[in-house]
Length: 448
Image (cartoon, rainbow, N blue to C red; front, side, top):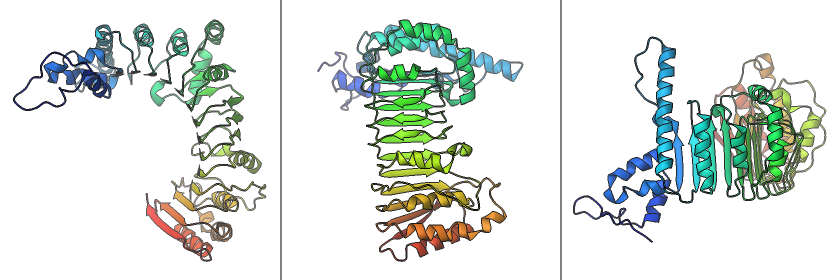
C-alpha cells in the first residue's frame, strides 16, 4: 500500500495514524462528512492532499447555515438574505470540491440541501460528475423536484447498489405530493420514459420520500431492478394497483396509498405505517410484520378486510400492531382467522379506553398457540374515547382472560404504560387471572 511522501508534523511523539497506508486513511476520512474530512486534513502535512482522493462524498447544507444573521429591516428579508448566502457558500464548496477531486472511483455520493433551495443546474453538474465515477450509492435530499432528465440519468446508472431520492425533507403531505405530481407535466414524464432506458441491474436498496408515480411507472422501475432487496416509500403518491417483486426482502410504506395487492414471495420484513387502505398481501416468507394506523384509524376497514390482511401474514414470527383508538361497539361478529403457528412475539399499542382494541387483541390471541411474549403498549388517549365508556370493565376482563388462556407456551407478558389509572389496574388483574393456570408466566410492568 502507498504512503504519502510528506513526513508527519509534530514533536517527538509517535503519530500512529499518520503512518497508516493511504487507503486506510482514505477509508477513515470517508466516514466523515466531506467538510469535516477537509478540515481534518489540515491537522497534518502528511494528510494535506488526502481529501482529493476521498472514496465517499457527503455534502450537507446544514454545515453551512450561519448562526449569526445579517441586520435587515424585516425578519423575512433577513431570512432570504441569509439563505442566499448559505446557498452560495454551500454551492461554492461542493463545486470546488468536485473540481479538485481526483477522477477516482466513488463509493458513495450524498447531497442534502436541507432548508436551502437547490440550484438545478449545479445539481445536474454534480450528479453527472458522480455518475461518471460509477458510484455504488447515491442519496439526494432537496426541497423541490429536480429535472426529470436528472432522475433518469440516475435510473440508467448500472453501478448503483443504493439509491434514495427524498423531496421536501418530510415537509410535503401526500395530498400536496399528488398536487405536485399533477402539476409536474405527466405528458413530458411519459415522453421521457419512453425514450429513456432504466438500467439498474445491481440496485439492492431503493428509497423515495414524497415521490410521485403515475400508473405503471413504479412497476417499470422495479422490474428493472432484478436484485432489489430493500424498498422504502414514505409519503408517496402512487397510482399502482400492485407491488410485485421476486427478490424483495424488506418493504416499508409510511403514510402512502399502498397498492391493493402486495406480492413479494421472498419478503422477510414488512413495515406499514399509517396506510390509506389495507392491502391484500402475498408474502409467504414474511417473518416480521409491523402495522400502524396511528393517523388513519378509519382506513383499517371492516373486520373482513382485517381478516383478509392478517391471512396474508400467516407465516410471521413477530407481529406488531399500533392502533390507538376506535369507537367501541356493543357487539362484534368476528370472521374466522387462520392459526398463526409461527408467531412467538406479539406486540400491540393501544388506548386503554377502546373496547375495539381489546377485541382486536383477543381476536388474534386465540390464534397464536405458540406465543412466548406478549407486549401491551399504552398509547396516548385522545380524550374523545374517554368518559363513561371507560368504566366498562367487561371490555378487558372477560375477553382477555378467555383469550390469554389459549396461549399455553406464553412465557412473558410486558405492559408498557404511560399513566396509572383504574383501567390499567383492571388490565393487570385480567392478565393475572388469565395466566393463573399457565406455568412460569412472568408479568412485567414498565413505564414509558
